[in-house]
Amino acid sequence: MTRYHLNEMPDAWYNAIPELPEPMQPPLHPGTREPLGPDDLTPLFPMGLIMQEASPDVWVSIPGEVIDILRMWRPTPLVRAERLERMLGTPARIYFKDESVSPAGSHKPNTAVPQAFYNQQEGIKRLTTETGAGQWGTALSFATAQFDMECKVYMVRSSYEQKPYRRILMETWGGEVVPSPVADPSSPGSLGLAISDAVADAAQREDTHYALGSVLNHVLLHQTVIGLEARDQLKLAGEERPDVVIAPCGGGSNLGGIALPFMTDRDVRLVAVEPASCPTLTEGTFEYDFGDTAGMTPLLPMYTLGKDFMPPTIHAGGLRYHGDSPIISALVKAGRMEAVAYPQGKTFEAAVMFANAEGRIPAPECGHGIRAAIDEALAAKETGEEKVILFNYCGHGFLDLAAYDDYNNGRLIDG
Ligand SMILES: Cc1ncc(COP(=O)(O)O)c(C=O)c1O
Image (cartoon, rainbow, N blue to C red; front, side, top):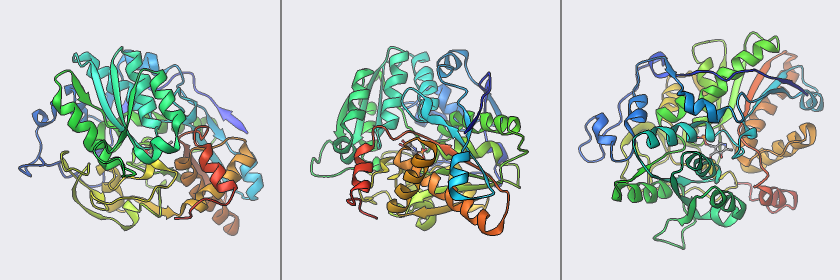
């Protein structure tokens, strides 16, 4: 195992929008179906983030106050998974970017911190949000604690019940956590329903805004620190470029974060990995749809399974979303990004192989990317190709051990 370290994190985010293969379609107002203006979003978001949603600039400076906090764990290490390579007997070189070293244990604080910062700058005292796996709610609770703000988290009920330790982490950082949907205690919930709960709460109070952990352009923008660092670290490792960049895709933020900085290099393949039980990119349709289930959010141009799609309660709670980021959707539609789907049994098999080779226990979401990375490495073994594979180690699985217990004891439903 070789680690590649940088001394400094980037001082600007990479905005892919001006460089996309085709221009993006605008979000539409949920009532009028006309393109949204900045003022339409002010009840929910601060102007600092609204301007980033449609920024024409390729580089956006990261405020010093944000860098000061991200420096607590950034730059994150790039690791060559040599033991996994040996286990697979592949000529491929496999690298992963270790985003599990953040305080919340995933990539999510990369955007939680700037979102809390821009809200605090505009005098907002309280943020509401949804969380699926619990990773995003933990990240936002950590970030709001840094800026002395309150945080209320609507946690998808199936995860609330599966993962009590995530709730305890959020509460330790001062977050208030309730199971969603609030109005229907018999429902396992979904990200779409939890977004509706959080938006409805924020819309009622002057001192409150809403924060979204994925999907939106500004979220992917903030996550590009991952790929920007990885690009420099691969150079340190003596690699000109990766042949393929892989990440799991729920709403698309960690995937966008690692992949977008490689987007303009046509020699780099970009691969999204999703659960077979929630196959948004591989089986959904590209159309305007709501981000939430109640139909309160703007209409976004994206691949979707329909806002009422109720995904099965798989362990990768962060991948149970009916839609996808418009940027990721545009790349898949343009043929610039590939998408694959796996049933959860195959992803846990890969996660356990990785855990035995490299010693780390990945989050179930992360197991999806690892599955695809292993399959790329096995394909390279067949052809004898010295392929360079980069994947995002987007979170650890220390609070997902019940899922491993199910897998280890043959109780995992292979949906
Ligand atoms: C560890 C981890 N990876 C991936 C995801 C999926 O989200 P996104 O596609 O926005 O990265 C989540 C979402 O909660 C997550 O917790």
